[in-house]
Every structure is written in C-alpha cells, then in structure tokens.
Amino acid sequence: MSDVIYNETGIGDLKGKTPNYNFNIPYFDIATWHDYIEENFRSIDALFHYIYEIKQYKGKWENNTTYKENDVLFIADNNSEYDGRLIKVLLEHITSDKPFDTFYLENTSNYEILADPNYAYLYAKEAEDARDEAVDAKNILTNELFTNYYTKNETDTKDAVYYNMVKGDLDSVKLEFNAKIGQIDDVLDAINGEIV
Image 1 (cartoon, one colour):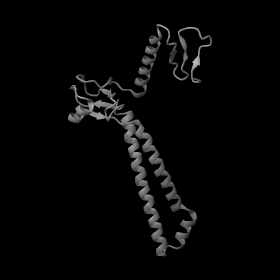
Image 2 (spheres, rainbow, N blue to C red):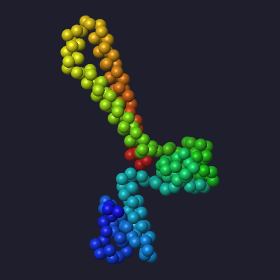
Image 3 (cartoon, rainbow, N blue to C red):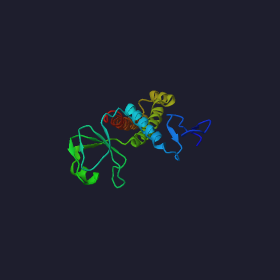
Image 4 (cartoon, helix red, strand yellow):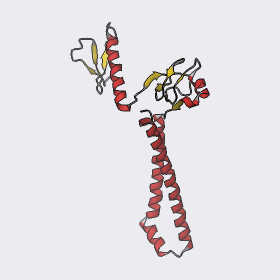
C-alpha cells in the first residue's frame, strides 16, 4: 500500500488519496463511503472523456435497446468473443434479446469492432524487430570495407551477385518494416481517431 497517501491524523471519512489522480480511498465501515466512490467514478468519467474524446459512449451493450449511429459501447460478457472490447454503432437499430455475438453475426453492418490497444504493443514489437533486421542488413550493405572491396572489384561476378543478394534482403526487410509501421498506424488511428 505504499502508493497510498494517508491522512496524517488518520481521522475522518477518508483513509487517504491516491498519489497520481487524487482519488478517494474511504474507510468502508462508514455510512457515506459510497459518496466518495461515486466522486471517483465521476472523476474517471471526466478524465476518459478528455483523453479519448468519445462523444457518444453509452456504456455496456444491452439487449432490447435502441442505439444511434456513432454510439460507442462496451461488451461485458464472459461468453463473448468480444468481451472487453469497444464497438462503434454504424447504423441506428434496436438490439434483440439474443447475446451480442449472435446478434452481431446476424447484423454485422450495424457495428465496427474497434481496435484492441493490446495489438498496438505486438505490432510495435514486430516493427522493432523488423527495424533491427533492416539496420543489420543496411550495416552489411554500407560497411566501408565491403563497399570499398566491391568498388574495387566491380567486374567480379561473385561480388556483384553477393551485393545484389544483400541489397535484395534489405529491400525485403524494408517492405516488411513499412508494413508493420502501417499496421501500427492503423491501430493507433482506430484507437485515437475512429472512436471520436
């Protein structure tokens, strides 16, 4: 509990505040503890709205509910493939009494499944690996000794073949790297832009 800033006196309804966002940590054996928790939720709500600028977040996806275009919903169903994901409503509609996965399969044009931020890390790691490969290949290509050797022996077929092979490897790695960068951009666009 070292991350908790405790009241110096230990007296009052609050045990303390969190260090970063000053959230309330109430004693739970008092009658008004829920007021402090409600204040925390209101604070979190305001922070998320500011950070993500989601204008139409409607909370948990519900059965038999009307949703409008651009509403953003949260899937909270342990049995759902999309549990924990955000979705964006593309067409105004009324949901049925079916579970989300079933309803979604029957009405895919109603929703866009928004990007999972966890994938951004994976793509970034893959791009980092591709970048390292590109750097290694570039170092081979631009190595002063190799370049000098190749320049002095341009007419040697073996040198030319090796040079072109390494250059081809570098071009391949560059394409892979650029593809990963594109995937990262797509994920970040989805996270930062498409849920606005």
